[in-house]
Image 1 (cartoon, rainbow, N blue to C red):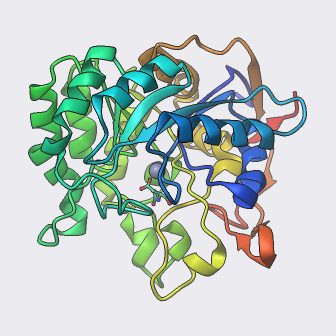
Image 2 (cartoon, rainbow, N blue to C red; image 1 turned 60 degrees about the vertical axis):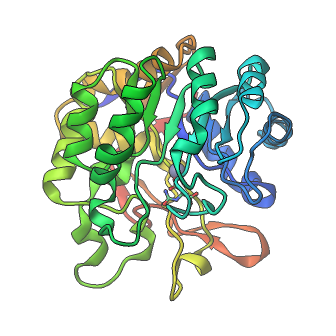
Length: 346
Ligand code: NCD
Ligand code: ZN
């Protein structure tokens, strides 16, 4: 197959940032995706319906002319999120999930949840109004090895949470391990997971062997080859509990190439093409549409898109960098490498 037409995909996990960075990165997403679940980890975080509404307006204003891209907003859960805020979020019509960042787990998570038991009233409200919880699935205690943080989160937080709230819908974001893939596959249909291109493409050797590659550093960190294989199997299995979420997370080159570099890979400028390569290499291109375009809206109870995109097997070279404001640049995932799939202009 050298050409494939898909129901237009959506990105179910995306960081758009704000201001000049938002304006720089948004066109890459709108060229490919009809909608995206927009992460709320701004500084300060998006913790109120009002702040989410204002952020949504800034995103709409930053769309390229003629774009009908729809940002699906999220709220940032804190120890103090009230049930009233949850009910108002559900009633807003534009907020589609609430994001759990364990405090200290990742970029801009300082205001995150210190102990999920403090959020019981908010979680009960989410269950009552059927607003999904989106989780960054890592524990943060200093004693837990960074490669074990996701598995530990399943045992200590996610499993008990699903038992305590039997109707709560949960997206386990950017899963990185075979353990997480098996947990989701064996779980109820109210549990789903997003999978990023970097976790399907690389294992941790890519990050650490032959030199440290800061542009491949994201959280949760890349894991073993057997984990990558399990994620690939899950993504291409046709199981509706797995869907596309790039976790594209732009950071300026200067903050990535640093003595204490930021976590996050920028992939939106070739996101659907990367997934096409991954699915084609796995011999499962026929399963791309389910993963990229059907499973996500079905889980979020939104209509599937009626627009379509076409991908062609035609080489493109991923740019070395993209311009950002103030002279800084943004280095994309697989910078400078050849990609054998391209997006055909509509
Ligand atoms: C994300 C970011 O930079 O906002 N970074 C990342 O490594 N994925 C935050 C997140 O999703 O963990
Ligand atoms: Zn993310």
